[in-house]
Length: 198
Image (cartoon, rainbow, N blue to C red; front, side):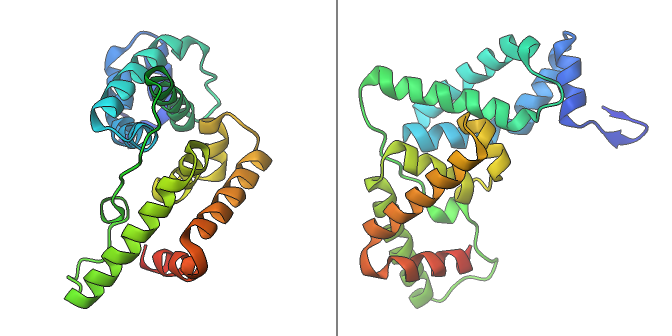
């Protein structure tokens, strides 16, 4: 659907959904289903739990549409609901999530196939980074993944994490410091190489 040949933006889809248009909400689900699933997976560490959390979050978001402020951005509002649902699932199961995200899936490399040496080095760096990330607490992992793996802006992160901009910056700074510590002496170099490759 479009108006005068232009695609509808989130605000227009949300307005239609708030007015009872189920198809409009389905469009929002389609638009944000993949990123919602990834956020849930980053928190739960389980594909099955992430799928359940995402579905439940979309149901909760649908029933909360009446309380959504139309001038607010929809994506971070939705992702906050997804993150909360995923966290609630972890807490209810009394277990810690072990994030097993592969950098190659989240941060696509160039189309050219790397040499075996480059591929081995890249895999080793990615493996070291993931091991270090898995040693961090849930809050640290979440803030790093939202910013660097899902490319959320700091503004979107404030809504998703339900905190102030200064809190996002300080959490991110502390999380990166802990990540550097977990990586050891080569940590700074590794993070720089990953940033260049990404």
